[in-house]
Image (cartoon, rainbow, N blue to C red; front, side, top):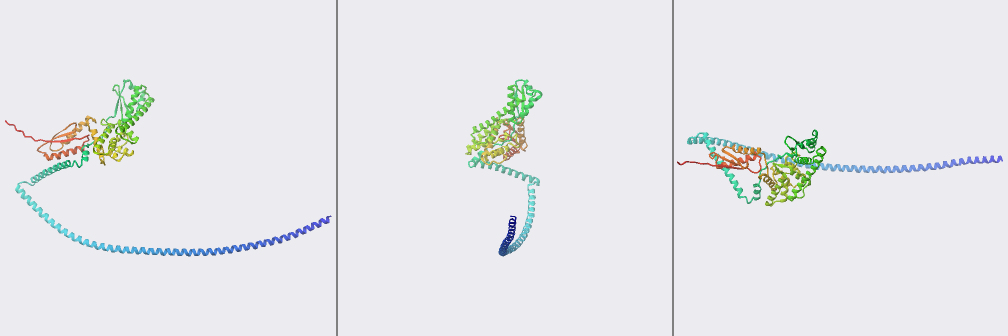
Length: 522
């Protein structure tokens, strides 16, 4: 049994050894076959790569050759263009040289002509000099002969000639003025509209508000102490909240509110009146009443602006401009309420525009807004004209309205008849009797200045300012001032008054020349 097993094992070992040798040779054959296949594949790839490289090399060579040819063609074209440009430049240079040659020849010809002309002028100058000398000799000889014939000295003859010449010139100037006036009168039909507008124009002066205080009546003097409060806390709170000075002095049962802003002053006045009526005066109550009064005044301001627009039939105005217009209710100028004045100017402008066939709606709008700058001139730097122009532009008012505002005091030239009408209506409204008040000192000063201007001229005997300064009557010396000289003197005095004085309306200048001869029969 063991022998059989041994034999079996021996046979198995032999089979294993044989299998190993067989497997080795089989794997070796397979490996060699795969190696041959790999070599064939590598040779194919290498051959393909060499072929592609050769093709790529040929393509690159062809591309390079084509690029070289292209560049050569470009260079040749550029050379041709440059040659053409150079040829053109050479032609232009040749033409310029020819032109310069022609100019040189012309200049030489002109120089020759100028030289001849200078010689001719020198000859003429010498001839004129000789003639001047001869004329001076003749004039001197004639003067000597005239002096001998007239038996006058040179100074006396000169004075006589100058006096005669002055009289002739004075007569001519007066005649020219009268002729000019006659021409204007004769052409009145042709220039009717323009003459009407210019005839009603008035000069106007800038005005400022003279009313800066408001007086409040008290029920008794005890109220002054309550208004002041403990250690002055009430009055300090009132002044801080309103921006208005509260003046309490020895005047019985009266306190004064002082401030340049009329809106603030009105708010302070209403606040104090409500506090006095209520009787409870302390900082918290003052603040409450100030807010209430401010709201009331703002509401009234807007209502005043709307009422003005409704009264005049104006539409489509910016709400902020309406509010600013309403502020004019609390603005005065020489005692004249500016809102009432603006409404009056609007109505007068509209009436004048209707007579002349102009746009009434535009005219009434320009008249109403002509003094809009006065509503805020104490808050914004600048004149009321400049401020009004800025406001009108800001809220997109028509160009004619802007120009009417800018030109109604003559600061700029009017661009339309409506602008001239606004200026005229402004003067009409402010110059009518009772429209404005001015201080006695200013009134007397204006009258004295009028008489001083008139008396400063030679030949004026005396002068009198009459009709509240609206007319100046001047008596002249009849032996020194002729009728022709009176026309010129009146014009000179009128011009000086317009230059040196500011006044509402017109001032009439009247000259009177009277010569009397009196004999007494005995």
